[in-house]
Image (cartoon, rainbow, N blue to C red; front, side):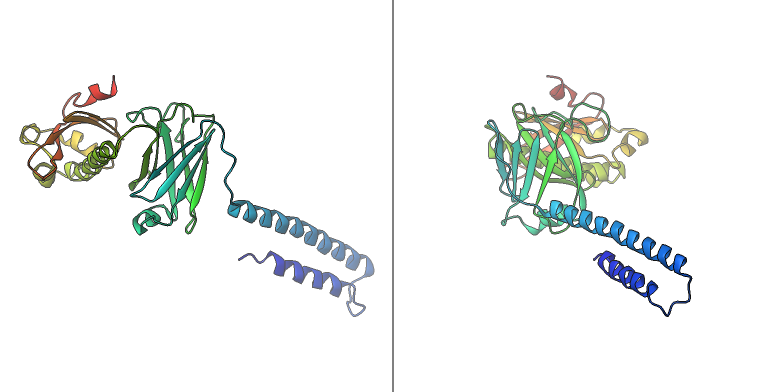
Length: 284
């Protein structure tokens, strides 16, 4: 709540008192102070108008007219819809969005990224927000957010994702023919890789016992290699049959293999972390 209106009223009252005959100040000084008070009131009036305009702009709603080739998709599990219209991506929390999704975005800096291939990273360009990635603060209680890229990418983007750069995944959509099974595999690999990285960096035996095959466990890495995964998160995933590559934010890649029998539907395990493991998936 701003105090600008109250301040305006107080200054107006002060200006009126300056004109009272009971004041002992000389007439010239009273006139100068009154003029100064009026000037401050005018400035504050401009500030109030600007503040109200900013508030209206921040709460302005309405869907812009869709351009030819606009892309629309929904992550049903996360309850998030994506509309890529020209160079503007509109992300909206649906009424069905679970509390997990709402809690993840409320009051956090949330990054939206769109790309042409799922293996593609945040994109070309300098700085923390390159060409097809933008990060914005998501105010608590807001149900939609717009991200504006530098140019129209609606004709080339095949997917978009929403994430907290620190906490990780919020929602992901694929524009095209990627099946729900494909999305589920990519998501499982991402979740597994993120859980494994924290344990692996801490030399916790659970990293091997829960997420790695026996051959991978037998290859003892250096302490520096482990520590490089301390704050690393999976950024890209490429699946090819029973194998997959995952690229982490520390620049390293690992190889996953789908192991049958560990669960009714099988599970993705890390099969190699050394050298160029999994890197070939991102060079095709």
